[in-house]
Length: 48
Image (cartoon, rainbow, N blue to C red; front, side):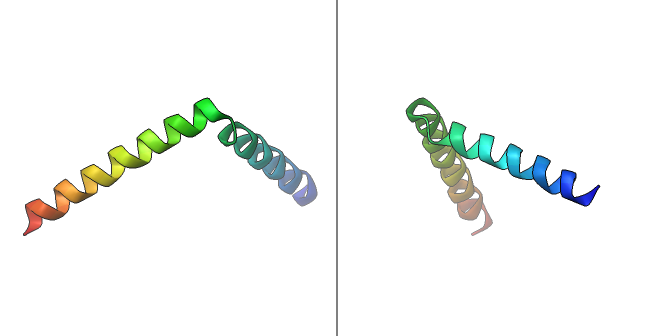
């Protein structure tokens, strides 16, 4: 049973990596990272 679970997890990981390599998804990822960075910066400024 453990072998099938690992194989399934590897399959899902491969699918995620393949999707992340697509240019349109890279743009979405970069936008999400930029948004997250600005939110973190805003929170850090509020703490000071």
